[in-house]
Image (cartoon, rainbow, N blue to C red; front, side):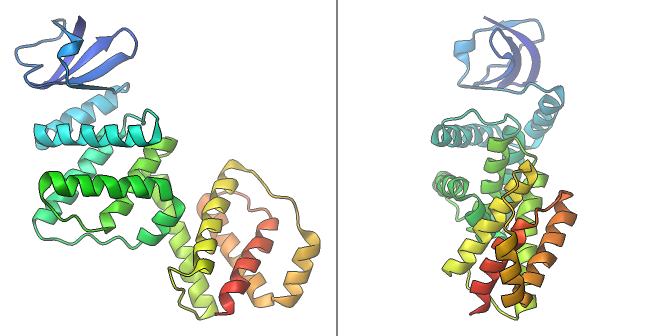
Length: 276
């Protein structure tokens, strides 16, 4: 038997748990007539998850004011799918952020409003595993709700999944995706080209940019490539100078030092693209 700490609604309780401190229990009629201090059998719950922070509990309570219980149940099924695919317990905040996001996304779809995602390709390249699972979730939602959610939504869901997996804020994950898109735009303008989003050179560039951002954030610097740097600077001055322009943008956005060796690898990618 578990002690009730807070009643969120007739179907959702916050209880004290011997292993997880405080957990959220979900079950039909589970909270009816309950008050703090009462006991409840844990096996009566259909679902449970941990919300350790008081702030998260309050946000989830606010969520329950406008999201119906059937949708809450559906979201718990979806989060279980993600945890199963990655064999990991997700950061509990996803119960708030993803539920809120998809609730309003589905509302817009039902109103006939389109969902635009200018960073869809970049998101798929940066987070392929998350993107694949997000595709599965959108397909699952379409079947359950008899809807046709636009493909752009897959990218947004993938970012939520990545945020929960890495315990990085959604704002930070979004900022990195937008940074890659900005760098691609600068490259296209500087080289007067329009890159084919399916081309192997474009895919290689975006993957490199994504990995570079990860390395820079973790301060995992590559070995200096001084001899090759001098050759590339002399042979491909346009691409070499552009690589430094991109590095300055990255430095300004990430607020981190960019190793000089990065200019070598960027120049090689840019030279391949410029041949187009």
